[in-house]
Length: 443
Image (cartoon, rainbow, N blue to C red; front, side, top):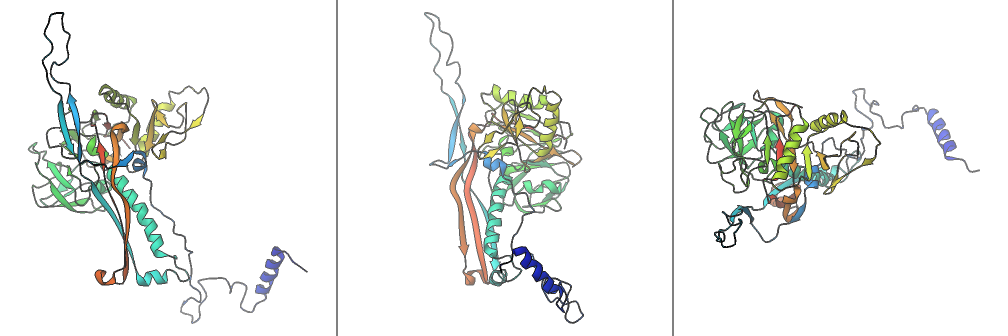
């Protein structure tokens, strides 16, 4: 006579209970021993699923438009209308003097970002045995793909300058939590708070310690407490912070002259064609976010002929802005909606602003990688806010992400399988004066 599954299991359990070995012997346990010394009869296993305990979000990378590189190594910008080429003319008056537009050039070459992974031949074999994680190469390849995109996102959101807490001729130190804004291969310059002078060349970074905050550079002018280290050139992608910059901008109470592309030092004065529409800082002193700060940034962009399409901020400022707007709402009904930005979407919001999705119709995108400011006392403050006109921003891709695998044991001089992911491209900004930044905000 057929029996049900539950009956079959019940009978099986009864059979185990009658075993002279005890009811739990067949279960995989770790406390059974064979010699009294604690040696396990069975090895504890954990399954093959590997869960990530890392933040792998890449929201800015996903939101910015991506285009094919094209047959170009730069672009031109028209920065004035010519002198008196347009004016009223009386019936017998002379026509305006002929003048030409001022054309500025920007040079931009593709950058390469790479991610590696590998596994020994022995680990590939043993990972498939009982208790292993299965195909270790597949696991590492999946992890490397996430890490690769995360690196691209962090390069796009990297800060361009920080106040130095200590230094020498070969290194400088910043708070550990912001050290990853500097990358190996980047070149940095220094603004000397003692003399008010800036270095006119960059020192290459050879090492970054994200535990201590120490950044090792090529031997040169000595860094000291209170100086400002800022980006002279990037080895990887140019960041939004590099683009939304200007000469002598306030950085922790000091000044910096972050470069982008081939723009030379001391030619990005506020109000110029290659400077940000608005940079609002507070001399390294923390202050709360206000709607006036946001409105000023939006206003300056519109005065320059742009139209903000995206607001990027950290989660700390996102909730501050939500609390600012909640007190001003008149709740006439709620309607959940989201706004698409590239391949990303804002958090669900309501048109009353109870949970933010937009501000003045501009989508808000919180990104955990948004850089933070540092105070004059070397304390890490809240995240910055960037107001962007994405019509003039794009990620230009020269070569899409490539995967290369190598099993040449002789070349490696080891029994290992190695993998490489690399992407060739660059962040392009076809205009600089249609973006704004707000810094020195409280966390």
